[in-house]
Image 1: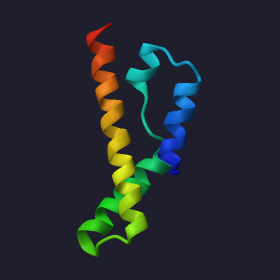
Image 2: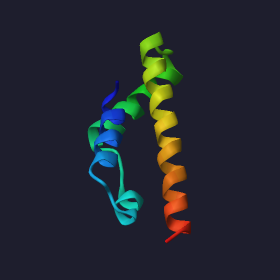
Image 3: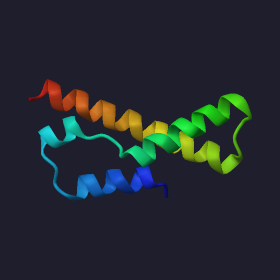
Length: 75
């Protein structure tokens, strides 16, 4: 499991409120890691495990964006 996945699981486990979800963002270490993976993918290509890590993050990012959109709409 990636650090980003752990962050989201921990966030959900806290019983976060709608407002918390809307404000949720990955920490700087995770954002830097994802930026590095994207840059490496464009420049040199990724190893299979790095591709998997980036794919996981992108799915999680999509899930959080969808949840934030619904939280705002239902607020």
